Length: 272
Image (cartoon, rainbow, N blue to C red; front, side, top):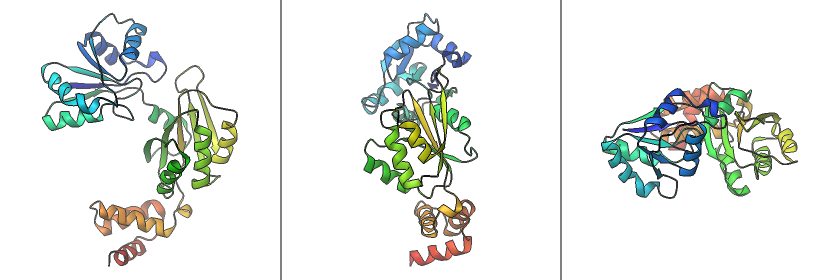
């Protein structure tokens, strides 16, 4: 089978007993960076020397079939540099190939930067969406944020410290300067920091420069911020994805506050 194993995102003490046992008995490990895996084995005091195979964004498509075939014969442990493989890390293509070939995939749960940041952000945690890494260019970022302007769920993003100030400024321009957010830096590490405030306040906070791994958590749009045309667009998007118009109208109504009946009628009109 294929075993996806979550590794510490900072603090080595977060390595689970299951992870340590798996690392100690593994004969083959597919790793995002084999050097990082070697350092992890050494840091955890594991003297096992498994065969290490590189699995990263640049070779996953080519190696997936080969690795799935290998997993038919013996367990294949899959690691990313930190956190759970497949979550903004290599492994998704491998799982797709394994599912297509009927090879079992399981996971060893563990640390997650997404859930850790969400938990400490001070923003609503009952419903959220993970948006992965933001774009490198301002125009690309703003276009993505505009598509999320009516999103009522808490949003979680990854970003690089070198551009987080510019990213926060773009968020303020699109979501509004007063939208609440949190920047979670160096999670589980010695210099862990959670900066909370409005997007405008966080732009000022980032002006002096930010270091380390970070996650940005942004509050969702309020009912007043979700304009009726945007709500109708959400209904139509759900219909295009296969949801019945009545059900889509009810779902969008529930998280925007707009009338389900009015959304339904607007959806009907748009389809004519």
